[in-house]
Length: 78
Image 1 (cartoon, rainbow, N blue to C red):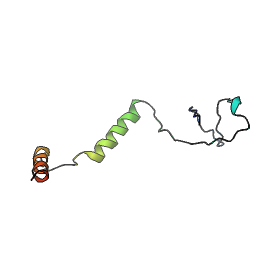
Image 2 (cartoon, rainbow, N blue to C red; image 1 turned 90 degrees about the horizontal axis):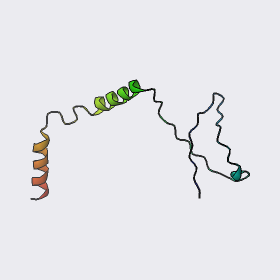
Image 3 (cartoon, one colour; image 1 turned 180 degrees about the vertical axis):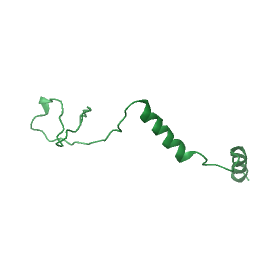
Image 4 (cartoon, rainbow, N blue to C red; image 1 turned 90 degrees about the vertical axis):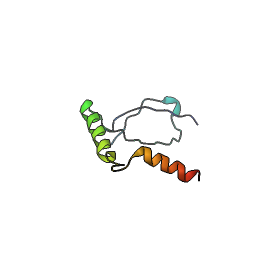
């Protein structure tokens, strides 16, 4: 099965325009829609980074990662 990929924007009335692919006329096709994140420059990138940091900052708070590694290895190989 051949696959074609292109990017387009859904119009306000819900229509999607696709490039002219005349060789596919009168053939059944499957359509997958993947919504891309709206990127509006550096400001949006900063927000994505900030969201990531807010989610994971302090994940191992109060623990020493090196101590956890050595404890894991001791338990694994005893």
